[in-house]
Every structure is written in C-alpha cells, then in structure tokens.
Length: 184
Image (cartoon, rainbow, N blue to C red; front, top):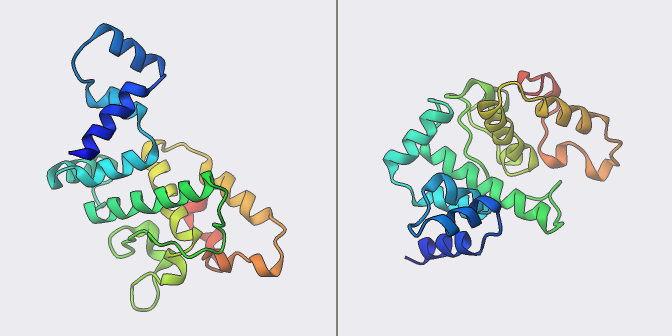
C-alpha cells in the first residue's frame, strides 16, 4: 500500500532525535507512538481515514464520547485544508472551504449557537474560517482543558481593526459569536 510506504519513508528520512535513536538501536519498524511524531498534518489526517471504524470510534470516545467518526474525519480534512492555506500564505479569511467541517449542534451543545431555525448549521458559517475555528477550539479544550487559546484568539479577532470588505461576517463569524461560552 503506497500510503503505508510513504509513512515508512517519512520515518526513515526524519532527522528528529527520537527517530534517529530508534533507527540506530532497533531494526524493527517503529511503534505507532514513535512513527506518528514524524508525520506532517496531512499524513496524520489521511492516517485517520485509513483507520478501521472501530479504531476511529475509540479515538472519538477518547476525545469526547459525543464525537462521531464522520465528524472527526471531516474535521481532520478541514484542518488540513486550513493548515495548508496558512503554510502557503493563501487567502483564508473570506475563502469558502472545500472541506467544511461536519458540526453536530443537536448532539454537541457547544455548537448549538451555530444552528439555524432548522437545527442545522448554515453553509455560510461552516464553509468559512469560523467553521474551522470551532473544531480547533473543541479539540484544544479536549486535549488541554485549561488552554487559554480560545480567549486569546477571541481577543485578537475582536480587537482587529478590519475594513468593511474584510468583515467578521465574511469569515463566517455570527454577530453574537463573542457571547458564546466557547470563546470565554
């Protein structure tokens, strides 16, 4: 399988000290917790796609029991797209995301503020930067509950002196986004 061969090649090329140490001491392929440290975001995102449903379910339960595998996979694709846009200095603020995140406002209460009258999140919100910031925020809080990242980001965005053409709305921010507990 070409994907697995690519992961192996990434580990063999890695200049990380832990990878060099492992290669010098052992002849076997590295365990996953060592190999994953050499992967870039794209490989990690694609790696989650290649997991069995049972392993994806276990990963979702470890992050948050309300999270579904379809949602997690969509988040990884979305965050990979955002990461690539940032890494290549592409437009992101008012760009429509190709890989919009799947959000579950009925299942995950933290997303309820994004639901319209029909109970669904509008494409205007989930296909814009704000839609990608929601999973980032959720994952940051899941892995680091005391993180101040959401508050720092909210302050940065709220204090930005933006021209009318580059409004918060053009990035999918709802008018009352700052009032949502996700950002406090």
